[in-house]
Image (cartoon, rainbow over all chains, first blue to last red; front, side, top):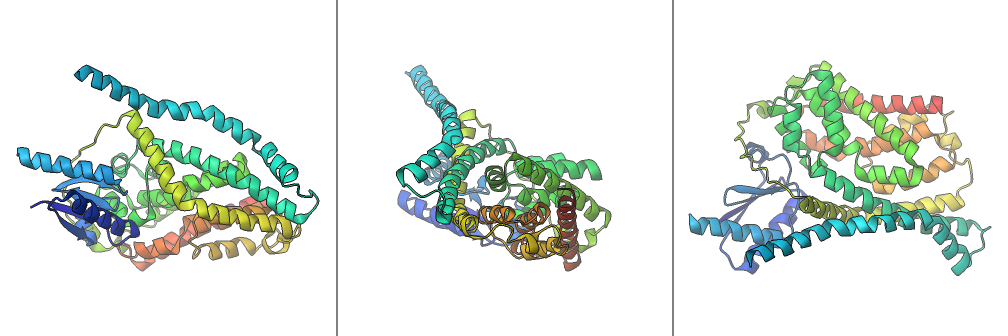
Length: 86
Length: 349
Protein backbone atom coordinates (compact mmCIF):
# COMPACT_ATOMS: atom_id res chain seq x y z
CA UNK A 1 0.00 0.00 0.00
CA UNK A 2 1.41 3.37 -0.99
CA UNK A 3 1.00 6.02 1.67
CA UNK A 4 1.57 9.75 1.71
CA UNK A 5 1.50 11.35 5.13
CA UNK A 6 1.15 15.07 5.68
CA UNK A 7 2.32 16.12 9.14
CA UNK A 8 0.98 19.37 10.52
CA UNK A 9 -1.42 20.51 13.19
CA UNK A 10 -3.97 22.28 11.04
CA UNK A 11 -2.01 25.26 9.78
CA UNK A 12 -3.00 26.81 6.47
CA UNK A 13 0.04 25.43 4.68
CA UNK A 14 -0.69 21.92 5.97
CA UNK A 15 -4.14 22.02 4.39
CA UNK A 16 -2.65 23.31 1.17
CA UNK A 17 -0.08 20.54 1.09
CA UNK A 18 -2.75 17.89 1.69
CA UNK A 19 -4.83 19.30 -1.14
CA UNK A 20 -1.81 19.46 -3.44
CA UNK A 21 -0.90 15.83 -2.66
CA UNK A 22 -4.43 14.63 -3.39
CA UNK A 23 -4.53 16.60 -6.60
CA UNK A 24 -1.13 15.36 -7.79
CA UNK A 25 -1.87 11.74 -7.00
CA UNK A 26 -5.21 11.93 -8.83
CA UNK A 27 -3.63 13.57 -11.84
CA UNK A 28 -0.89 10.97 -12.02
CA UNK A 29 -3.46 8.21 -11.69
CA UNK A 30 -1.45 6.38 -9.04
CA UNK A 31 -2.87 4.63 -6.04
CA UNK A 32 -1.91 6.35 -2.80
CA UNK A 33 -3.57 6.63 0.56
CA UNK A 34 -3.23 10.20 1.78
CA UNK A 35 -3.15 10.52 5.51
CA UNK A 36 -3.10 13.70 7.53
CA UNK A 37 -1.26 13.50 10.84
CA UNK A 38 -2.44 16.23 13.18
CA UNK A 39 -1.49 14.80 16.55
CA UNK A 40 1.31 16.89 17.98
CA UNK A 41 2.94 14.00 19.79
CA UNK A 42 2.91 11.91 16.62
CA UNK A 43 4.46 14.76 14.65
CA UNK A 44 7.19 15.38 17.16
CA UNK A 45 7.70 11.67 17.71
CA UNK A 46 8.59 11.37 14.06
CA UNK A 47 11.43 13.83 14.64
CA UNK A 48 9.79 16.63 12.67
CA UNK A 49 10.67 20.18 13.63
CA UNK A 50 9.07 22.10 10.78
CA UNK A 51 5.53 21.73 9.55
CA UNK A 52 4.06 20.89 7.12
CA UNK A 53 6.23 17.84 6.59
CA UNK A 54 5.66 15.32 3.84
CA UNK A 55 6.36 11.61 4.07
CA UNK A 56 6.11 9.32 1.04
CA UNK A 57 6.18 5.61 1.78
CA UNK A 58 8.01 6.06 5.04
CA UNK A 59 10.53 8.61 3.86
CA UNK A 60 10.41 12.25 4.91
CA UNK A 61 10.93 14.19 1.70
CA UNK A 62 10.30 17.75 2.82
CA UNK A 63 9.68 19.82 5.92
CA UNK A 64 8.57 23.37 6.53
CA UNK A 65 7.46 24.17 3.03
CA UNK A 66 5.13 23.32 0.19
CA UNK A 67 6.99 21.73 -2.71
CA UNK A 68 6.04 22.51 -6.28
CA UNK A 69 3.80 20.08 -8.06
CA UNK A 70 6.58 18.93 -10.39
CA UNK A 71 8.88 18.20 -7.44
CA UNK A 72 6.09 16.28 -5.78
CA UNK A 73 5.50 14.25 -8.97
CA UNK A 74 9.21 13.51 -9.10
CA UNK A 75 9.23 12.23 -5.52
CA UNK A 76 6.18 10.08 -6.08
CA UNK A 77 7.72 8.52 -9.20
CA UNK A 78 10.97 7.95 -7.38
CA UNK A 79 9.20 6.27 -4.51
CA UNK A 80 7.23 4.00 -6.84
CA UNK A 81 10.42 3.02 -8.69
CA UNK A 82 12.14 2.05 -5.46
CA UNK A 83 9.14 -0.08 -4.54
CA UNK A 84 9.15 -1.83 -7.91
CA UNK A 85 12.85 -2.63 -7.71
CA UNK A 86 12.48 -3.86 -4.15
CA UNK B 1 26.12 10.59 -25.82
CA UNK B 2 26.26 10.41 -22.08
CA UNK B 3 29.08 12.94 -21.84
CA UNK B 4 27.15 15.39 -23.94
CA UNK B 5 24.15 15.16 -21.67
CA UNK B 6 26.25 15.93 -18.62
CA UNK B 7 27.79 18.94 -20.30
CA UNK B 8 24.47 20.45 -21.31
CA UNK B 9 23.02 19.96 -17.89
CA UNK B 10 26.03 21.60 -16.32
CA UNK B 11 25.64 24.51 -18.67
CA UNK B 12 22.02 24.90 -17.73
CA UNK B 13 22.97 24.82 -14.09
CA UNK B 14 25.57 27.54 -14.38
CA UNK B 15 23.10 29.79 -16.21
CA UNK B 16 20.96 29.80 -13.11
CA UNK B 17 23.86 31.26 -11.21
CA UNK B 18 25.20 33.57 -13.89
CA UNK B 19 21.93 35.32 -14.75
CA UNK B 20 21.33 36.70 -11.23
CA UNK B 21 24.96 37.80 -11.03
CA UNK B 22 24.72 39.63 -14.35
CA UNK B 23 21.52 41.32 -13.19
CA UNK B 24 23.10 42.57 -9.99
CA UNK B 25 24.86 45.68 -11.44
CA UNK B 26 21.61 46.70 -13.14
CA UNK B 27 19.86 46.33 -9.81
CA UNK B 28 22.32 48.75 -8.20
CA UNK B 29 22.13 51.17 -11.10
CA UNK B 30 18.34 51.30 -10.95
CA UNK B 31 18.29 51.44 -7.14
CA UNK B 32 20.59 54.44 -6.90
CA UNK B 33 18.90 56.30 -9.76
CA UNK B 34 15.44 55.67 -8.38
CA UNK B 35 15.06 59.09 -6.77
CA UNK B 36 15.86 60.88 -10.04
CA UNK B 37 13.48 58.61 -11.93
CA UNK B 38 10.74 59.34 -9.38
CA UNK B 39 11.32 63.08 -9.68
CA UNK B 40 11.08 62.77 -13.44
CA UNK B 41 7.81 60.84 -13.25
CA UNK B 42 6.11 62.89 -10.54
CA UNK B 43 7.24 66.41 -11.47
CA UNK B 44 8.01 65.89 -15.15
CA UNK B 45 5.60 63.45 -16.72
CA UNK B 46 2.66 63.67 -14.29
CA UNK B 47 3.42 67.36 -13.83
CA UNK B 48 2.41 67.66 -10.18
CA UNK B 49 2.94 70.95 -8.44
CA UNK B 50 5.82 70.40 -6.04
CA UNK B 51 4.29 72.66 -3.39
CA UNK B 52 1.09 70.74 -2.73
CA UNK B 53 0.63 68.26 0.10
CA UNK B 54 -0.76 65.65 -2.27
CA UNK B 55 2.37 65.83 -4.39
CA UNK B 56 4.42 65.11 -1.28
CA UNK B 57 2.36 62.03 -0.55
CA UNK B 58 2.43 60.81 -4.14
CA UNK B 59 6.17 61.31 -4.46
CA UNK B 60 6.70 59.34 -1.26
CA UNK B 61 4.57 56.47 -2.54
CA UNK B 62 6.02 56.37 -6.06
CA UNK B 63 9.54 56.40 -4.67
CA UNK B 64 9.22 54.06 -1.68
CA UNK B 65 7.21 51.21 -3.22
CA UNK B 66 9.71 50.26 -5.96
CA UNK B 67 12.63 50.96 -3.63
CA UNK B 68 11.39 48.65 -0.89
CA UNK B 69 10.32 46.01 -3.42
CA UNK B 70 13.77 45.99 -5.02
CA UNK B 71 15.44 45.67 -1.63
CA UNK B 72 12.99 42.95 -0.70
CA UNK B 73 13.77 40.84 -3.76
CA UNK B 74 17.53 41.15 -3.31
CA UNK B 75 17.68 40.57 0.44
CA UNK B 76 15.12 37.76 0.50
CA UNK B 77 17.06 36.07 -2.30
CA UNK B 78 20.38 36.35 -0.46
CA UNK B 79 18.88 35.30 2.88
CA UNK B 80 17.11 32.44 1.10
CA UNK B 81 20.48 31.16 -0.14
CA UNK B 82 22.18 31.66 3.24
CA UNK B 83 19.37 29.70 4.93
CA UNK B 84 20.06 26.64 2.77
CA UNK B 85 23.25 26.24 4.77
CA UNK B 86 21.27 26.01 8.01
CA UNK B 87 18.46 23.82 9.27
CA UNK B 88 16.70 23.40 12.61
CA UNK B 89 18.32 19.97 12.90
CA UNK B 90 21.83 21.36 12.50
CA UNK B 91 21.10 24.29 14.82
CA UNK B 92 19.80 21.90 17.45
CA UNK B 93 22.97 19.86 17.21
CA UNK B 94 25.13 22.96 17.65
CA UNK B 95 23.12 24.18 20.65
CA UNK B 96 22.82 20.84 22.46
CA UNK B 97 24.89 20.83 25.63
CA UNK B 98 26.11 24.40 25.24
CA UNK B 99 26.66 26.27 28.48
CA UNK B 100 24.26 29.04 29.39
CA UNK B 101 25.86 32.24 28.14
CA UNK B 102 27.65 30.78 25.12
CA UNK B 103 24.49 28.87 24.27
CA UNK B 104 22.32 31.98 24.49
CA UNK B 105 24.61 33.93 22.22
CA UNK B 106 24.81 31.15 19.63
CA UNK B 107 21.05 30.63 19.82
CA UNK B 108 20.37 34.31 19.19
CA UNK B 109 22.72 34.38 16.20
CA UNK B 110 21.44 31.09 14.79
CA UNK B 111 17.88 32.36 15.22
CA UNK B 112 18.60 34.93 12.54
CA UNK B 113 19.81 32.48 9.88
CA UNK B 114 17.90 29.28 10.62
CA UNK B 115 14.71 28.89 8.57
CA UNK B 116 11.83 29.48 10.96
CA UNK B 117 8.09 29.94 10.80
CA UNK B 118 6.12 30.70 13.94
CA UNK B 119 3.66 28.01 12.82
CA UNK B 120 6.40 25.45 13.56
CA UNK B 121 7.29 26.94 16.93
CA UNK B 122 5.92 23.95 18.85
CA UNK B 123 7.61 21.05 17.05
CA UNK B 124 10.78 23.10 17.03
CA UNK B 125 10.55 23.83 20.74
CA UNK B 126 10.05 20.17 21.57
CA UNK B 127 12.79 19.09 19.19
CA UNK B 128 15.24 21.43 20.89
CA UNK B 129 14.30 20.57 24.45
CA UNK B 130 14.44 16.84 23.79
CA UNK B 131 17.86 17.10 22.24
CA UNK B 132 19.12 18.59 25.49
CA UNK B 133 19.16 22.24 24.49
CA UNK B 134 18.64 24.14 27.78
CA UNK B 135 15.30 25.93 28.15
CA UNK B 136 16.85 29.40 28.32
CA UNK B 137 18.91 28.75 25.21
CA UNK B 138 15.82 27.51 23.36
CA UNK B 139 14.06 30.73 24.29
CA UNK B 140 16.91 32.86 23.00
CA UNK B 141 16.37 31.13 19.67
CA UNK B 142 12.59 31.50 19.79
CA UNK B 143 12.87 35.21 20.55
CA UNK B 144 15.51 36.06 17.95
CA UNK B 145 14.03 34.04 15.10
CA UNK B 146 10.80 35.99 14.57
CA UNK B 147 12.10 39.35 15.82
CA UNK B 148 15.03 39.58 13.43
CA UNK B 149 13.66 38.50 10.08
CA UNK B 150 14.53 39.47 6.55
CA UNK B 151 11.31 41.37 5.87
CA UNK B 152 11.81 43.60 8.90
CA UNK B 153 15.41 44.09 7.87
CA UNK B 154 14.43 45.17 4.33
CA UNK B 155 11.88 47.68 5.56
CA UNK B 156 14.17 49.15 8.18
CA UNK B 157 16.98 49.41 5.67
CA UNK B 158 14.78 50.90 2.97
CA UNK B 159 12.73 53.31 5.05
CA UNK B 160 14.99 54.20 7.99
CA UNK B 161 18.50 53.64 6.64
CA UNK B 162 21.25 51.26 7.67
CA UNK B 163 21.98 52.87 11.04
CA UNK B 164 18.55 52.14 12.46
CA UNK B 165 18.49 48.71 10.81
CA UNK B 166 21.74 47.93 12.60
CA UNK B 167 20.44 49.30 15.92
CA UNK B 168 17.31 47.18 15.58
CA UNK B 169 19.27 44.01 14.86
CA UNK B 170 21.81 44.48 17.61
CA UNK B 171 19.34 45.48 20.31
CA UNK B 172 17.04 42.67 19.16
CA UNK B 173 19.90 40.24 19.59
CA UNK B 174 20.77 41.61 23.01
CA UNK B 175 17.13 41.19 24.10
CA UNK B 176 16.98 37.63 22.77
CA UNK B 177 20.25 36.65 24.43
CA UNK B 178 19.57 38.29 27.78
CA UNK B 179 15.90 37.26 28.00
CA UNK B 180 16.88 33.65 27.32
CA UNK B 181 19.59 33.93 29.92
CA UNK B 182 17.16 35.28 32.53
CA UNK B 183 14.59 32.58 31.70
CA UNK B 184 17.35 29.98 32.07
CA UNK B 185 18.32 31.39 35.48
CA UNK B 186 14.74 31.39 36.70
CA UNK B 187 14.71 27.57 36.49
CA UNK B 188 11.29 27.27 34.96
CA UNK B 189 11.71 23.77 33.55
CA UNK B 190 8.90 22.49 35.79
CA UNK B 191 6.47 24.67 33.85
CA UNK B 192 7.05 22.80 30.63
CA UNK B 193 4.26 20.28 30.07
CA UNK B 194 5.49 16.93 31.38
CA UNK B 195 4.80 14.92 28.23
CA UNK B 196 7.38 16.95 26.33
CA UNK B 197 10.18 15.34 28.29
CA UNK B 198 8.60 11.90 28.35
CA UNK B 199 7.95 11.68 24.63
CA UNK B 200 9.96 9.01 22.89
CA UNK B 201 11.47 10.31 19.76
CA UNK B 202 12.35 8.03 16.91
CA UNK B 203 15.62 9.29 15.58
CA UNK B 204 15.03 10.70 12.15
CA UNK B 205 17.18 9.08 9.52
CA UNK B 206 19.82 11.64 8.75
CA UNK B 207 19.45 11.94 5.03
CA UNK B 208 21.22 15.20 4.50
CA UNK B 209 21.09 15.69 0.78
CA UNK B 210 24.05 17.51 -0.69
CA UNK B 211 22.87 20.65 -2.38
CA UNK B 212 24.64 22.11 -5.38
CA UNK B 213 25.08 25.84 -5.67
CA UNK B 214 22.39 25.98 -8.33
CA UNK B 215 20.00 24.11 -5.99
CA UNK B 216 20.69 26.83 -3.44
CA UNK B 217 20.01 29.55 -6.00
CA UNK B 218 16.77 27.77 -6.88
CA UNK B 219 15.79 27.86 -3.23
CA UNK B 220 16.68 31.54 -3.12
CA UNK B 221 14.27 32.15 -5.99
CA UNK B 222 11.63 30.06 -4.27
CA UNK B 223 12.01 32.17 -1.14
CA UNK B 224 11.56 35.33 -3.21
CA UNK B 225 8.45 33.95 -4.86
CA UNK B 226 6.94 32.85 -1.57
CA UNK B 227 7.80 35.82 0.64
CA UNK B 228 7.36 38.60 -1.88
CA UNK B 229 4.09 36.99 -3.02
CA UNK B 230 2.88 37.02 0.56
CA UNK B 231 3.95 40.43 1.82
CA UNK B 232 3.87 42.78 -1.19
CA UNK B 233 0.28 43.80 -0.58
CA UNK B 234 1.00 44.75 3.05
CA UNK B 235 4.00 46.75 1.96
CA UNK B 236 2.00 48.67 -0.65
CA UNK B 237 -0.82 49.33 1.82
CA UNK B 238 1.60 50.25 4.59
CA UNK B 239 3.46 52.67 2.36
CA UNK B 240 0.15 54.14 1.15
CA UNK B 241 -0.89 54.88 4.75
CA UNK B 242 2.64 56.13 5.43
CA UNK B 243 2.39 58.40 2.37
CA UNK B 244 -0.90 59.86 3.59
CA UNK B 245 0.61 60.56 7.02
CA UNK B 246 3.68 61.93 5.33
CA UNK B 247 1.66 64.34 3.21
CA UNK B 248 -1.21 65.37 5.45
CA UNK B 249 -0.37 64.93 9.12
CA UNK B 250 1.23 68.10 10.45
CA UNK B 251 4.82 68.14 11.63
CA UNK B 252 5.29 67.31 15.34
CA UNK B 253 1.77 65.90 15.55
CA UNK B 254 3.07 62.78 17.28
CA UNK B 255 5.45 64.58 19.62
CA UNK B 256 2.96 64.73 22.50
CA UNK B 257 1.73 61.17 22.04
CA UNK B 258 4.86 59.26 21.13
CA UNK B 259 7.57 61.79 21.89
CA UNK B 260 10.47 61.25 24.26
CA UNK B 261 8.92 63.57 26.90
CA UNK B 262 5.93 61.31 27.37
CA UNK B 263 7.44 58.71 29.72
CA UNK B 264 4.47 56.39 29.42
CA UNK B 265 4.74 56.19 25.66
CA UNK B 266 7.29 53.34 25.72
CA UNK B 267 5.39 50.85 27.91
CA UNK B 268 2.14 51.83 26.22
CA UNK B 269 3.47 51.11 22.74
CA UNK B 270 4.85 47.76 23.92
CA UNK B 271 1.47 46.84 25.39
CA UNK B 272 -0.29 47.90 22.21
CA UNK B 273 2.20 45.96 20.16
CA UNK B 274 1.73 42.56 21.82
CA UNK B 275 -1.76 41.75 20.50
CA UNK B 276 -0.96 43.30 17.14
CA UNK B 277 0.14 40.46 14.96
CA UNK B 278 0.54 42.38 11.85
CA UNK B 279 3.60 41.40 9.97
CA UNK B 280 6.48 43.78 9.80
CA UNK B 281 5.54 44.66 6.25
CA UNK B 282 2.46 46.65 7.17
CA UNK B 283 3.64 48.25 10.39
CA UNK B 284 7.07 49.56 9.57
CA UNK B 285 6.08 52.03 6.80
CA UNK B 286 3.44 53.54 9.11
CA UNK B 287 5.87 53.74 11.99
CA UNK B 288 8.44 55.41 9.76
CA UNK B 289 5.96 58.14 8.90
CA UNK B 290 5.17 58.61 12.62
CA UNK B 291 8.86 59.03 13.38
CA UNK B 292 8.94 61.94 10.95
CA UNK B 293 6.00 63.54 12.69
CA UNK B 294 7.71 63.76 16.04
CA UNK B 295 7.49 60.27 17.54
CA UNK B 296 10.75 59.43 19.27
CA UNK B 297 13.12 56.71 18.12
CA UNK B 298 13.02 54.67 21.33
CA UNK B 299 9.24 54.57 21.39
CA UNK B 300 9.12 53.61 17.74
CA UNK B 301 11.74 50.86 18.17
CA UNK B 302 9.91 49.47 21.19
CA UNK B 303 6.64 49.44 19.29
CA UNK B 304 8.14 47.63 16.31
CA UNK B 305 9.90 45.04 18.44
CA UNK B 306 6.75 44.38 20.39
CA UNK B 307 4.64 43.97 17.26
CA UNK B 308 7.12 41.76 15.47
CA UNK B 309 8.74 39.90 18.34
CA UNK B 310 5.91 39.33 20.79
CA UNK B 311 2.82 37.99 19.16
CA UNK B 312 -0.32 36.86 20.91
CA UNK B 313 -1.12 33.98 18.51
CA UNK B 314 2.34 32.52 18.92
CA UNK B 315 2.05 32.75 22.68
CA UNK B 316 -1.31 31.00 22.55
CA UNK B 317 0.19 28.22 20.42
CA UNK B 318 2.98 27.80 22.98
CA UNK B 319 0.37 27.12 25.65
CA UNK B 320 0.24 23.55 24.30
CA UNK B 321 3.70 22.86 25.67
CA UNK B 322 4.19 25.54 28.34
CA UNK B 323 2.25 26.16 31.51
CA UNK B 324 0.95 29.63 32.24
CA UNK B 325 3.70 30.77 34.66
CA UNK B 326 6.32 30.09 32.00
CA UNK B 327 4.34 31.88 29.30
CA UNK B 328 3.89 34.91 31.55
CA UNK B 329 7.56 34.93 32.47
CA UNK B 330 8.51 34.73 28.81
CA UNK B 331 6.26 37.62 27.78
CA UNK B 332 7.22 39.69 30.84
CA UNK B 333 10.97 39.21 30.46
CA UNK B 334 10.92 40.10 26.77
CA UNK B 335 8.56 43.04 27.31
CA UNK B 336 10.83 44.44 30.04
CA UNK B 337 13.80 44.07 27.70
CA UNK B 338 12.02 45.94 24.93
CA UNK B 339 10.88 48.70 27.30
CA UNK B 340 14.46 49.15 28.49
CA UNK B 341 15.66 49.47 24.90
CA UNK B 342 12.93 52.04 24.26
CA UNK B 343 13.96 54.15 27.26
CA UNK B 344 17.65 53.90 26.47
CA UNK B 345 17.09 55.24 22.98
CA UNK B 346 14.70 57.96 24.09
CA UNK B 347 17.25 59.06 26.64
CA UNK B 348 20.35 59.04 24.47
CA UNK B 349 19.09 60.06 21.04
